[in-house]
Length: 76
Image (cartoon, rainbow, N blue to C red; front, side, top):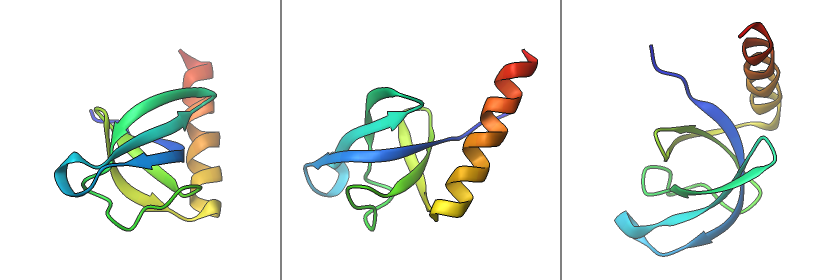
């Protein structure tokens, strides 16, 4: 099973395949690859899987994914 989590883009560096940025994942900033989401900007919510952002989320979808992730974590 694969799991993607929501994170907010804090900063962006580089271009093309070298594009990466700092993403807040539940209060922990992580360096994440952003090459697959060229339309992501600072402040955007993205889904992150295996160190790569794989999609851009609306604020509403991000809130729902964060809540579901927290619920799953509470079950473990």
